[in-house]
Length: 230
Image (cartoon, rainbow, N blue to C red; front, side, top):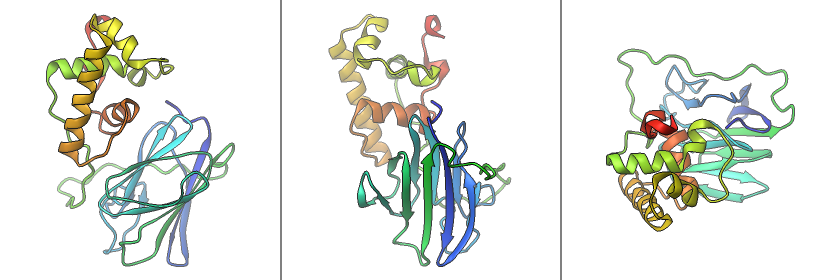
């Protein structure tokens, strides 16, 4: 889903602003030490993958790597999130900092109409062959049974096809699968529990699960939909 607003991000290390970029609306962009990161932090003390931004609905999601992140904005106040957390950023100004790092690193994100005007779009480059990758996100392929993959794909069909969110995701999926809402809900809850355990996450709702499986990790794809829905 394309964000409703425009967005920009500024990188500041200690007292020096390294740059300001427009956030891409149709792809993710990473921040970190790896050369291919769209927002590159070349310093040796920086994690290879500090965080990344994912476009989603009203704004962007930010997924942390292996460093805690502190969020300051009008929606959350000031909150510190554990490593690998996924946080929704909405319209307005958000300050993202990383208390565990040796240097003061701050990312200032502004989301709103025209926020990206005049700035080049940050884009990840191609990964170098043989590059050392010491920091990884929790996005490896999750082991799911064929039934689980089919149920998740049907439940989150709107994310795969980028259509409107159904008023009742479970009920709509149950009708298409020919199963009861209770069984669909149970299957999705079991998937969520397995993902949380396997990936050290804290997905709390069906919406969180869909965002993770379809948009963040790409574990559920078009091919998982039944043929009649493709």
